[in-house]
Length: 525
Image: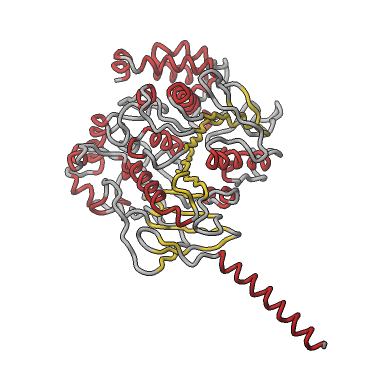
C-alpha cells in the first residue's frame, strides 16, 4: 500500500516537473522566420529578445551614400544575441562602429508569435552626428513588460548619413542626394511591416518615437510621403522640424535646400582632399572628416524624402495624419552653451533675429548681471518648444487625428541657496523616465522619480495601444485642440496646465512667419 502511494506521488511529481519544464521550453521560441532567414534570440524574464537582426546590406564600399540595399539572405538559423555594429561616426574609438550597421533589435513579451501586440519603434538622438541602438539606456524590457513589442532601429549619421553633392544627385532617378539616414529609418519600418507579425507584433499598429534628433526624425517621417502607411502613431520628445530653411543654419532653422546642401558637399570634398566622388568613396571610413562643424551632416529638403518646407506642408494638409504625442523639457537651453553674460545674450539675439531682437528680448528677458532661465528659454523654444507647439497647433487645425502635448519639468525643488535653484529639466533628461531607467543616485534625482517614470511609461504604451495615452490608472490627459491649448505637466506627478511661455512663443512665431517672406529669406542670406 505504501509502495503504491509512493509510486503515485512520484508519478505526480514527475508530471508536475515535466509540465513546468515544457512550459519554460514552450516560452523560449526556437527561431523566427524573417524575410532574409531564421533568427534565434534569448529568453529573458518572460520576453523574447533579439539583437542584431539584419534589415539592410552594408552601407560601405559601392553602397556608401546610396539608399539602403536589401540584406543578404542566409541559410540555417542566425543567432540574434548581440547588437550589430553601431553606425560609423566621428569621435574615438572606432571600435564597434562600422558602415555595416543596419541591424535592428526586438523585445517581445508575446507568448506566441500570433499575439499581434502594438509596436513601439525607437529612433535615437545625437544631433544626427552620433548615436547607437546599443546604448544601455535604450533597452526595451520595461516598455515591453507593459504589453508592447519594442523595436530599436539604427540609421547612418553625420556625413555618411546626410551628405549631398551634385555627383551624388546625378546618380539617382530623383536627381537628389542626402537623407540616407532617413531612408535607413524608412527601410527599418518597411522591415517591421513585413516581419513583425512573426515576433508577436501587429504591423497595423506601429508607433514611432524618438528624442532630440530622433524626435526631429519622427517629425520628418510624419511629413514624408515615403513613410506613408508604415506607422500609425508618432511620439516626439524634444523634436520638431518646422523652421524655415536657411543657408547659414541655427538651432530651429537647421535645414538647407538641396542646392545649398550640394554646395556644402563640394566644400566637404575639398576638406577631404579629393576631387571626385570615386576618390571620396575610396577613403576608409575612419579617415573621413566627420562630426559637428563639418558640412553635410544634417537632413535636408531634397524634394524627395522631405518634399518641401514642413511648415508649408502641414499648412496644406500634406502629411501623414496619425495621432501624435509631442513635447519638450523645461530647461533645454541649459544644455546648449547658454550665454555667460547678459551682453552676450543680447548680442546673440540681435545677430540671429535682426529686427525681431528687441521684441524677443522683452518676451525672454535677461537679468542685469546674469542670464536667468527666462533668457535661456529663447534657445529652448527656438529649437524645441516652438517646434513642437507649431506641430501641435498645425495638426490640430488641419488634421483629423488626436494631438497630445506635454511639458517635462521633473527635478527636486531646489532651495534658494542651491546653485541649481532656478534650473529645470535639461535636454535629454526625459529619456530615462520613458525607458524606466531613472537613477536614484543622480544629483537631479527626486523622490517622485520612480512613480513619475511608471506613469510616463504607461502613457507612452497606452498611446501605442489605443492611439491616445489614457487608461490603466493614470490621470486623464486631455488632447490639444484648436480651441484648447493644453499640456500635460510632468513635475512630480502628471497634471494638466496651460502652454508654458505661449505668449513669448507667439512673438517667436512672428519671426518665423517673417522668415518665410521674400524679405525674410533675403535677409537670412
